[in-house]
Image (tube, rainbow, N blue to C red):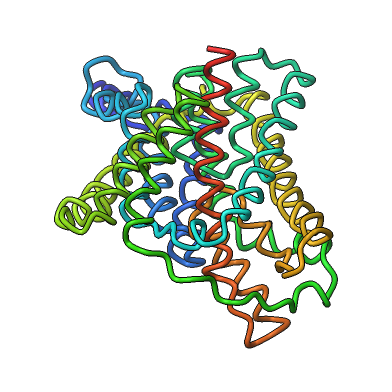
Length: 371
């Protein structure tokens, strides 16, 4: 009997608490969203299973246990190694042609970043420090890698809640954005058809990542790891002589890093670290910032139409957040509901990729000022 009791004490049943059960349910919920609802399954399935790994009671070898395997994987998160590798892959799979052909749409990507700075001040009002507020605010860009990168430098203790909030809202783009888009636009505006843009030459596509890198890093030097890798990946794609490297970046590297990053982020949400009042505030602020970012993008598109002869469909302003390509896809689907002949996907990709650049620049500015 003593041996049985000793064995029982080594099991998870002897060490569990209601907080562990709550987090295990959250992990299963994330997995269900990914598999059943197909909401960003490449992100939510690894993150959900990571939550299970991090919250099995009585275990050793988690991300916070020194010299464990999981702690070495988590090293890539907390030291900001994984996000630049994700950006390398994003650059290698992104076509900037629409943005090059219609550069004024970069303003929509910039306008959507207003949510970041609005939430920054909101976080301060809720009692967070300046550095914590900067890390929380970046959630408004709906950019998981950038959120992880900035929080690892400004607020490492909040990395888990910030990362989960950012990826959750990225996955919920199809649910959160459409009601805001419909609320802020009229039916007449939603049916606006945008003409096809001009064909962008190969020379322009090659020059763009080089010039963009020089300009953005001059403005926000601390964005170098993110934007440097983003534009390198794009140059590998567009140069025409490094397709093999571009293929590895957008496939193998992104897939491997996504698995490792997702599992590590999920495993970092241990109940005793994650279930706090701060986490609830972060989720609330993240939702607010994402809604503000979507709204300001749409409203700025409406403002631009006051001065443009060739009107733009204000729905594409919602794509100014960094959730590539999900926001652009949502804009396209929403536009087709009101005009079956309306094809907004490529037009929406311009503010969408501009949003990626904008959120990385914003992260660099915040880190430079607050770091």
